[in-house]
Image (cartoon, rainbow, N blue to C red; front, side, top):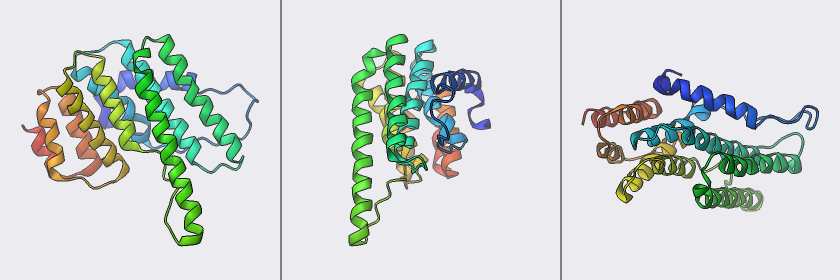
Amino acid sequence: MALFNSLRPELEIIHRRLVKETSLPRGLVSGFTWPALNEIDNDLLPALVLLSSHGQGYFGPRALSLAVVLQLIFLASLIHSQKGKQGVALQTLIGDYFYTRFFDLLCRDGNLEFLETLSQLICHLHLEGAREQEKALTGRVTGGSGDPEKGPDRASLALVATRLGSQLGKTAPWETRMWQEIGQLCGHLWSGKPVTPQSYQVLAGLPPGPARDGLGELFLFLTGQQPAKKVMAL
């Protein structure tokens, strides 16, 4: 995808690592259906980790590992939310397997300081999924519109990606808050939710450079609206 050209070498490393980390023993689980991902689903969370860490001056291997962790959590939450022909039990077990993979990565790659935040994120995703399931079950009787297959809370995933990515560098509290706002905005756009034109002004807090340029291009890709162009020109 041309959108992330400047990050492509690092994204390729991340994707190769993901293939390795998500490989199941041959013959152990036959006929398992992987979630269908488009290019933005494959690249967005890793790119947000890289952009936020680079924006705060960090370019080391911990960012690559953290990007893999966030994508593993996203994949696991998608697996939990999809209806597989194999049944709920298998989908749950496979999803849980990928959730637990991130513990191993945190231990191996020196990111254990993020364990609490990531555990809280997973708890949130599980509770949101349970609420959607309950809405769907209630809707059979009341006419509600719960959708257990709409997928995970992308705004929360993106917020954590930029928050933790930025904390790999030298980050003041106000900068952490700014990156959280940027991540949440990206997550809302990723989910197709409406945002106000004023929301794009959060980019004005970033100094000119590749991180701000990359985020501006991402906003343009997700919305095609003029406010992002104005922010990029600040």
